[in-house]
Each structure stands twice: as structure tokens, then as C-alpha cells.
Amino acid sequence: VAKVRRNGKEYMQKFERGIPTTTLDEIGEADSTGTTIYFKPDAEIFETVEFEFNVLETRFREMAFLNKGVKIILEDERKDLRKEFHFEGGSKSFVEYINRNKNPIHKDVIYFETIKDGTLVELAIQYTDSYNENVLTFANNINTHDGGTHLSGLRSALTRVMNDYGRKNGFLKDKDEN
Image 1 (tube, one colour):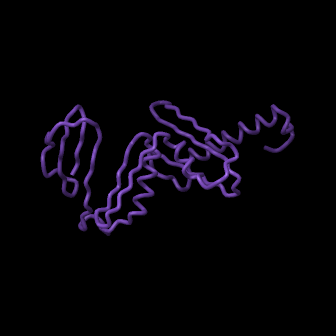
Image 2: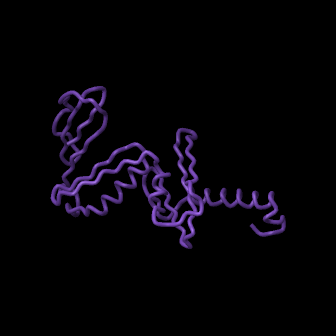
Image 3: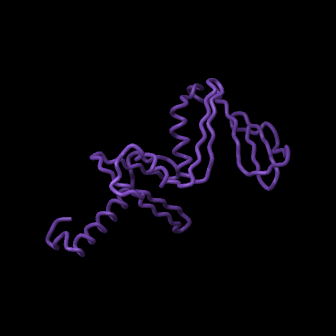
């Protein structure tokens, strides 16, 4: 069941196996906007119809961080579990969350956001005193576990900027390796 609130109205439509079983009907007034999806897995489509709350919790938390301002509510009526995710800071808040139990080298997360050729790009970095690198990359809200050209491009650009800064300020000599 999909319920949509917009333009002061609430609409509803039901689906089975991806096919509408009702028309899109106006069902009342709405004083807010948003979409609510009620979902029950179909054993004829899915290998398993038992979902793990913790897996969904992690994924929905990521989605809320990556789509700042969006509120996602996860409910498991089988166990009376409910989690709400809403982060106005986007990927900056994500980095703060990831580093919440670490010792940052600098207090503020380095954050950039821009739109170029219709594509939104966000970057959030915070260095900690940890010896382990923790790099998460996403494209279209999907975790690209193996990185990709966006990560290699970032690393190349960051290395170039650091080397240029080091040479300009006398930390590196022209003959030193990058």
C-alpha cells in the first residue's frame, strides 16, 4: 500500500506483485507532505520473507544520512520494534555518527556539497587517531564497497593538493617523492 500526502491531499493505491490492484484514490486531507509504504513480502517473489531488523536498521540509517532531511520509520510489528531515522546534516552527520567513539584529530568534519551538471556531490571527512582507515563511498545511495572511480579520483586530488601544499610551504622539497 502506498500513501502519498501532497498539495493538501492524501492519496492511496494498493499493489500486488508490482501491479496496481486499485486506482490512485484521494482519501482525505493532509497537513503535511510525504510518502508511506506498507510492505509485506511475497513468498512467490522473495527467497525469504523473514527480514532481519538489524540489517534493515543499518540500511535505513544509511539512507537517512545520505538523504538529509528525509525521515524513515522502520517498524517490525512482529516484535513491537520501531526505529526512526532523520538527520538534517546528511553525510556530515554520518561521519560524526561513525566517529562517535573515536578521537578526532580536528573537531569539525570537513564538508563540501556541490551540484555540477545536475549531479549532487557530497564529501565529508574527519581524521581520527585510529590506524585503521574507514572509507565509505556511495553512488546513487548504494554503498560501493570496492570504491570506484569517485574514490580513486578523490584520493588523487587529495594527494595532489597535500603535495602542492607541502612543497609550497617547505614541508616537501621539489626532489622529494610525493
